[in-house]
Amino acid sequence: MAVPPETNEAFLREVDEELRRDELARLWKRWGLVLIAVIVVGLIALAAFLWWRSHQAQQAGLEGEKLTAAIDQLSSGQTDQALPALRELSKSPRSGYRAAAQLAMGAIDSQKDPKAAIAAFAAVAKDESIAKPFRDLALIRQTTMEFDTLSPDQVIARMKPLAQKGSPWFGSAGELTAVAQLKAGRPTEAGATFAALVADPGVPASIRSRAAQMASVLGVSVNPVAQPSLPR
Image 1 (cartoon, rainbow, N blue to C red):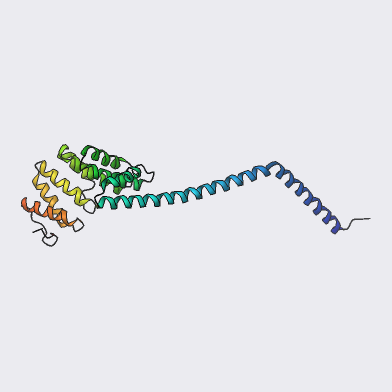
Image 2: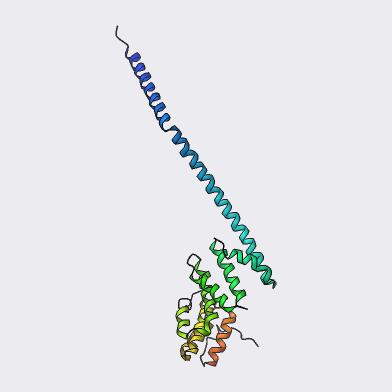
């Protein structure tokens, strides 16, 4: 008796499904434990990453609080109380807090230990893992501390990238440059630099005021509109 086509197809489907189950069983027996291990390791890695990120954020928050407290203490003249936190933060793996603490310690040392202050500022200025604004500020502070031991040309060369119009450091760097130009016996260049400082509204008023006085002494006319009010 011939087998109906429908029965034959059903039989073939059953055989095919059975073969697939056997194949899956063999694959699971061979790779199942490995797959479970990979999934578990992946979950552990994800959990570890999430914990690390949360821990980093928590640590950053704690360091921010420590830095704020230390700055408040410095503002109140409590230098000795601020130093332990600043020393700890100066070793932070987070470059922003590390730089801020090192700059603060350099400022403290500048009052009593110039060599230590210069070393602190130089360390920040050379550390490329620290953001450029911190490094630029450190270089200006370092140059200010070293001014009397550097040649005028060294000061001018060091400040050249920062003593440009539009630079956020044009005021401080430009003033150092102008004084170095005077020291080098180049009053015309110094007068022009002082005049540029006076004419730039982005330069702090205190620097513009000093620059206006120096430009006047050097016989350089300055823009009367941009010129700040001189202290009486």
